[in-house]
Amino acid sequence: MTHTENAGASGTRFFTLPVIVLVSISFMLGMSEFIVVGILPDIARGLSVSEVTVGNLVSLFAFVYAPVTPLGSAISARFPRFATHLTLMAVFLVGNILCAFAPNYAVLVVARIMIALVSGTLVAIAMTYAPDVTVDQYRTKFIAWVFSGFSIASVVGVPVGTWIANTFGWRWAFHLIDVLTLALIVSMVVVLPRNSHMMQVGFVRQFRLFIDRRIWLGVLAVVCGAASSYVFYTYLTPIMRDEIHIPEQFLSLGLVVYGVACLWSNLHAGKLAERGRGVEPLYHLRWVFLAHAALLCSLALARVIPFYGAILLIVLGMFMYLFNASSQVLYMDVAAESHPGSMNLAASLNSMSFNIGIAIGSAVGGLVNDHLGLTWLGPFGALFALGAVAITLALGRFLPAATQQ
Image 1 (cartoon, rainbow, N blue to C red):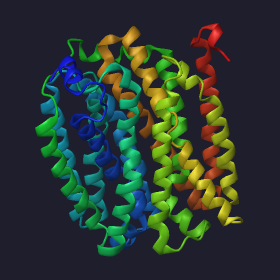
Image 2: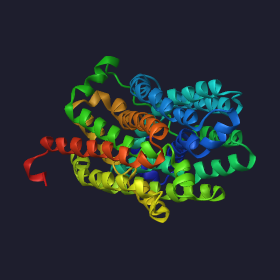
Image 3: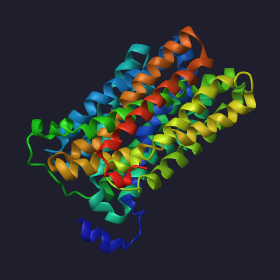
Image 4: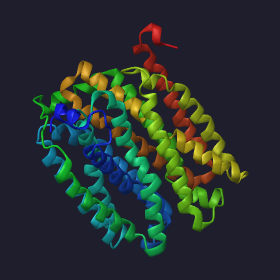
């Protein structure tokens, strides 16, 4: 199916079957990546390791995900898209099956690494379907919804997985992921277009994209933005349980509410990304990062004022992904303007950057939790948010004078 055929077949309708399948892929990737946060205590008890040790799976996942994503995306540009997409989904399925049957922590680590090796490239490939499954006027909407698949996983997937883990055992959460992934692979075969946009640019030449200072600033802004949230998000369940004193039976509901806030964040990010082209949308978010820093500092009050802490977590969820679509617009627009042979690589940068931020944030969160306790996670996250403020201010030098407000 070509872009013209798709537009003609569906008119101005956005939610076609291919779009739904691509968003669903993001949902499964998000559920698999974030499920550890929801069932962290269950895995720790089941494998007889500490919660901090299980929390390290989050940073390990991201440490693998981040460097492999641009490499995998650059390589995938040289092969038939659909076959590559399907093959990587099969690897993703095998990794999750291994998670479900892992007899010990070491095997679980291997399984998580398998999943991390393919997840970022799967997101990047999904982005490249945009010209084939929707029209140009829905570009930022498509970007926002692909990223929103991860938030939908927070709203529905992770809480459901947590409930299943609490009811039947943590391994059944991964069994659920396995069944849904298998159904999704069948859907991909039925509805996704088979045409490819194989790049003729050499593998090494694609990485010239990294010479551009706008790309580096965008990457650093996302790293700081993600790290600011993941310092505390990695330990969201213990924070709700020990700081805000939410009863164990209501933790799943708490994750649902937080996930709804995250979904709003991702969808609103699409609207913020419409404020210009190139670096402009991300530059305009400097005040958002500043407000986020102030809110993170006040998370230290959660233990003293539990009701405030509960409301604050919802607000922090609403801030968590506000920069996602704006940063993706920066990468894609800069690549289209100055490095057209690097579009696949550009499509991978947001996932790469975000997961570097996850790795750093969750690692810092583990150290802070170990040495200072949960109360200090928010203030340390605020330091990263302030770093994002400084970086987005630096983007101003690449704007025309008339747009610097």
